[in-house]
Image (tube, rainbow, N blue to C red; front, top):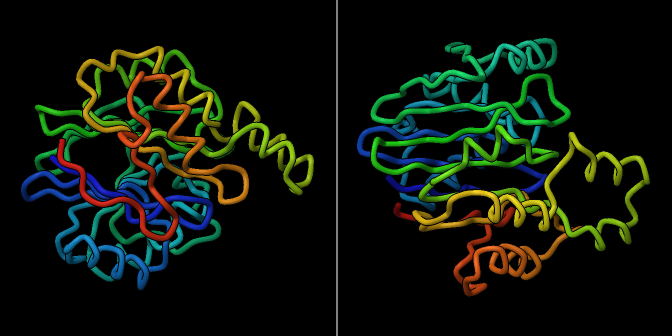
Length: 254
């Protein structure tokens, strides 16, 4: 199993997981045209995508879902809450499969386990994806590390973790106070220190990759995210990957 990021940040998010004949997109927050370009950088064709998993209805995660899925006949998986939140404002994918936020399901050779997270969306989830041997945990767009989140990410072989902001940079930014409060609130986004605290709470013995994701261009820096996560893991800072907005991050084999 391997994974890569097509891009991550406030202007779009998408991750791809590849295992044999199964290739899943986790979110599709770029235009269909941009997704094609980003897939090509990873030597993937759109016809090779088996399914799209949607975490929640915010535009930086669903902007290209309907058009891309419709054009290439790709099934889309989302919670009932996300479906209800999308329905009034978006053309829904032709093949939309509703999932239970607490129940695992299979797509091809991959087992997908969603889990609910606190975020200001209708029924937001994140995912653990496994090929039966290795587990990839993905956690972005989450305001608080709950006990359930901690349990779900125990013992993963790879983690993609939100490091949205540095508290000091956020406090000093020119964002309106209400937006600052929303970002740092219990239903907003994880900062570097929160992501680091999660790593200290879970079993990381099997961990082979950690990627910081969803970094704010104004309120964070890659070096700050790397430093926070490396300190939590007692590892070299350059061992920590960072998914950028434009380039994402290349293939990581698990």
